[in-house]
Amino acid sequence: MYRTLILAFCVATLATTAFADTVTENSGRVWNGTISSADDSFVVIQTEDGLELRIPRDRVRDISYSSPAATAPAAQTFVTPRYHDGGRVELAVWGTGFGITNGIFLAAVGGGEEKAYALAMLTGGALGFGVPWIWSEKRDLTDARARLMTFGGSWGMWQGLGWPYALFDDPSTNQILVPGIVTGMAGVIGTGFFTANRNISDGDAALITSSPGWTSIYWLWLAVISGADSGRFLLGSTLVAGNAGIVGGYLLSQHVDITRNDVRLINVGGVLGALTGGTIVVIAGIDNGKAAYSTIMVSSLIGSGFAWWALSPRVAAANAPDLSIAPTLVRAPENSDRVLPAMGMRLRF
Image (cartoon, rainbow, N blue to C red):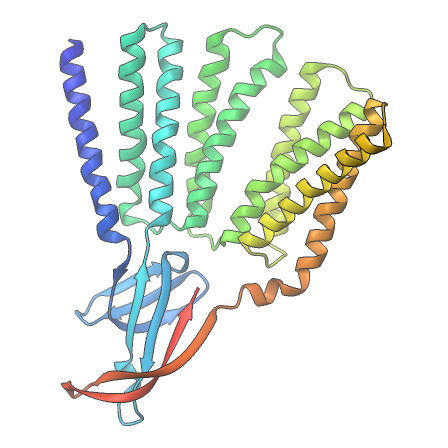
């Protein structure tokens, strides 16, 4: 029985490997054609073969195009977008680890032996890669949407694993792992539905996924200095604070124009601020626990706030695409063997 299952899962693994081979085919693909429209979300291209391609902006690495001489119709502009499959790959890679983790949880819930764990991990890994890879094949899965979906699955699993400890004194293994499996799946699927047909940038995604960690840390600080000492209360309220951070990050992303690198620098500002506070605690010899904790957290707030203030003047400039112009040659529209001098422009997103 086990030999048959192992053989079947090996075949499934080979099948997912075959799917993975298409990554090389799709990554770095170059098309020639004409841009028919472009906005903040998609670039629509009419290829030389008569196909219409609608590609998410964050999956287009760069566009090289040339405007031929005045005698050539504008519609004959030649476009070379470079396409990458980052969002699809990220979801599939994350899904592999997510599937393996769920396999371990299911084997533990079922009280399985060593063979059951091995088979569950193999099945989970194969499904975790194959399902998102096939699902995303016909969908516009941007990098930002993929990051939000992977975050939704991870955060949902964390919530499911954490709440049993917050609600019960001594939860059983099943009471812990089953909610983790359910809420993890609900997180990734729910985020996929919520982000469908929404214009979410990389900066928006970074802001949404970074906020819950900070709100959880700051709430824990406030709870500790206010005298809260119940472990269950601290855990439950911190879980709620993290959820509030997700909502706050999303609402804030609707009112600010920020890039992913800006968010990363603001996070680094908070970390460096906390390290500065820790250094002050050591040098000043602060022995009181609440005072030391407050010094570190206030310094972290100052660091992230300073980073936000320092980056605010350049946010609009950071979102502007780079444009370079250089002489080039293009084919004449009426004769493919003839070339015309032109000024070429390169737009990099």
